[in-house]
Image 1 (cartoon, rainbow, N blue to C red):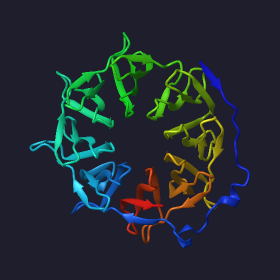
Image 2 (cartoon, rainbow, N blue to C red):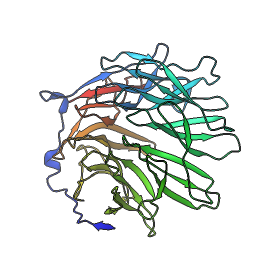
Image 3 (cartoon, rainbow, N blue to C red):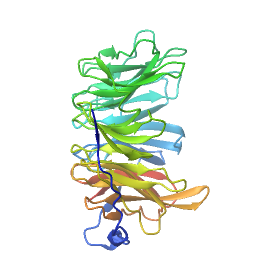
Image 4 (cartoon, one colour):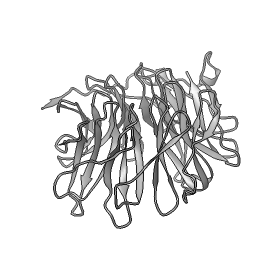
Length: 386
């Protein structure tokens, strides 16, 4: 079953809603630098809980090729802690990828011959997440409310296989259609519904929904590229089955909302409001919001900027992301922003002397997490509180 919804681009009055000097306004958000481990120069964010705990990575060197990198956790007060790894692990680096509301995080070590999956408990201990028999690497991608972790198990010259680790760390291979060789999970919600896909070497692929009982449903006829899912099981993403990229929202009952084309709704809240951006313009990107009734709204940029993108939305329909300006063909300056439920855009302050920032997460209380450049050009994990 599909539902076609009326689409309208609401852009009238956008310029009048812009905020050009948020730092000077009363009650403006204040930026807090979260810092790094001793000896490191940079840090970034990969998760935020409703209680204000942040996870990410502290590193030295270039972010894509660090000299040393450690998975870290910042408390609500900003205290940074290195997440522990197995003694004797040959991997020099670690990365935290997700955290649940209980404060349990997951991630892996890397940089050696194999990946080693870990689940970090709120009390500071950790549990190893081993690969399937015969494989040598495990790489988690997400964690649910009860501590169930999803990820990949693989090894040299072996297939990538989607797996699930139960709260007791028992690993289960997720089933795939006959004839498929590889699989990967992309997301899990707090009801332990998993979304991902499978493929083989003749370019045949499926989009799959793995149910909590371990069975799967082929949803390839509804969505080709899933991007986000909420706890109701509503998925947003792209459908390419008709020769072009349609923007879609798929409900747990199998119904589908068609929301336009050439746009990527990369985040969705509990009420079904999705945010992301439209990339159909050859030159610029445009932040967008899709309401539960299918109405799409272009979220405005800052007055001096050329493009924008929304990365997250909380249950109060406050969205966060970036508004950017192209300085030249090789350099873009990004500005962290948030959009209120009425669509008004507000710039978030920089670190002292810095000129670039991004906002990637927001929780229910209005704490925003992201990154900002220092005056010397180093990237630091930061939070803003609304």
